[in-house]
Picture (cartoon, each protein chain N blue to C red):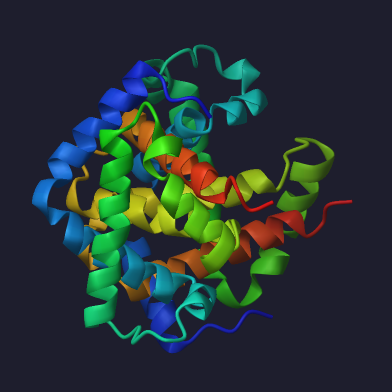
Length: 142
Length: 147
C-alpha cells in the first residue's frame, strides 16, 4: 500500500481538522471498538472497559497520539513507529485482524464528527493510511 | 437462526426509517468503488469509473447502489428470516455474478461509515453494534449458497 502525494495531503488535512479533538476521538474509537467488536476486549482484561472509563480515555489518547506521530512522519511511518512495532510484535501480540476493526471505528468517529470532510477521496486516503500503520505495527510479528 | 434483542430490532428499524435509500445506496456503492478500487472489476459495463468524480456522477452506479440498498431493506423487513430472504440472491452472486463474498463484508463496512456520517451522534455505539451485526448476517446469508 503506497501513499500517493494526494493521499498524504488528504490525511494531513483531515488530521488538521481533527485538531485538538484527537484525545476525545481516540476514546470514542476505543469505546466503539469494545462495544461493536467485543472480542477486542480480550486484550484488555486489566481495563475498566465501561463507557467513559478513565483508562479508555487515557488509552485512546495514546492511540491517537501514535497516529498523529505517523502523520507527522508520513514519509517514514516505519521509522516513526518502530518502537511501537517492536512492542506489538514482542509484547502485545495483538492479532493482525484487530487493526482493521480499530481502523473501522476510527473512520466511523471521523465520519460522525466531520461528515463533510470525509469525502470519498479522503475516506480512501485515510483507509490506506490506517492500513499502512497496521502493516508497520505487524511487520515484525514473524 | 440469528437472535435479535428487542433493542437491536428497534435500533435497526429506527435508523432504516430515516434512510434515503436512493442517496445512501448510491453513496455506499460509489465509496466502495473509490475506497477499494479493485471492486470495479465487477462493473466494466458501467462506463466511466476513471475518477472519484466520475464514479460519484455515474448514473449506473447510482441506480445500482439504489438497487443494492433496496434489496438490503428486505433483510431489515425480515430480520428473523434473512437466510431464506437472500437464498436466491446468494445463488445468483455465486453462479452468475462470480462475486467473492469478501466484497459483501467490504460493502457492509462502507455502509456503516455512510450511516455514521448521516446520523452523526444518533449513530450511537449500540446502534453501530446492531448494524454491524446486521451487515455481518447479510454478508453471511449472501455467501451461504456458494459452492
